[in-house]
Length: 72
Image 1 (cartoon, rainbow, N blue to C red):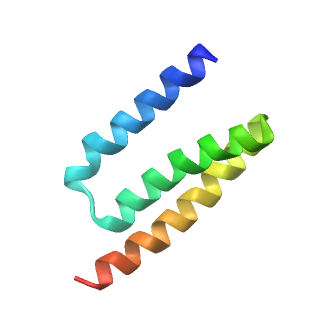
Image 2 (spheres, rainbow, N blue to C red):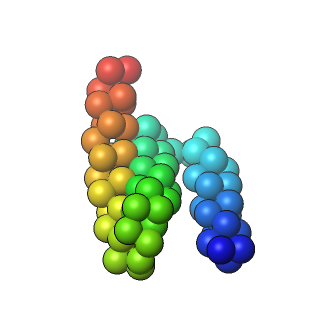
């Protein structure tokens, strides 16, 4: 549990730190992957759930970011 929290905090910090030099699609992909991984782990409680959630979150985040970039 402690290791997972440390990894989650590091991933979240990386997303925010790199956010200044990314477009919305890239930022959405990173944030979606982190959020999806957390949700996948919480729901399924396995490595497969975490990886699947991260993949799904990355895809959704990328699409949301692309649409946000197009509105500019």
